[in-house]
Length: 136
Image (cartoon, rainbow, N blue to C red; front, side, top):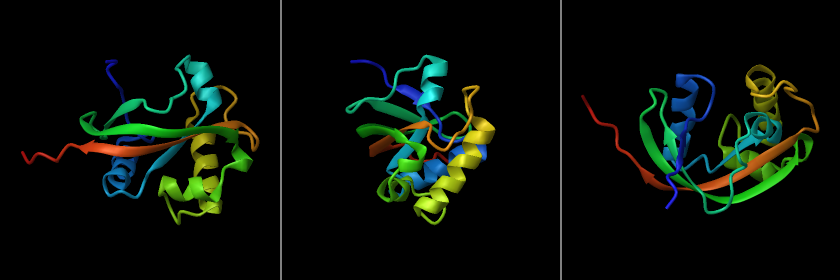
């Protein structure tokens, strides 16, 4: 069995913790990334059935996810359903677009940054395991 990739949501430790909390609460069941980021980093696009270890803002493993669906669509064609699955803000498409445009203008891994019709990898997932917080 291939060891799952370990990664964190967001761009900062606080952002990672906030998005992870949405996953652990069952609110966040989707995520999105520019296809251009995958191409630039030479990382493969996630595939259905793939597992991911999700890290918190300190880099500690906290969750195991399984990818359940992948679609690649232009930014301006991401659906209301996907926006709701991401669990952020008001969970509307308008809020999703605002949040993600801001994020990708500031944190894209690729030199092209953001454009309104850029290809976006929309990923849906399910939480398989959550590591409890250890007091310490």
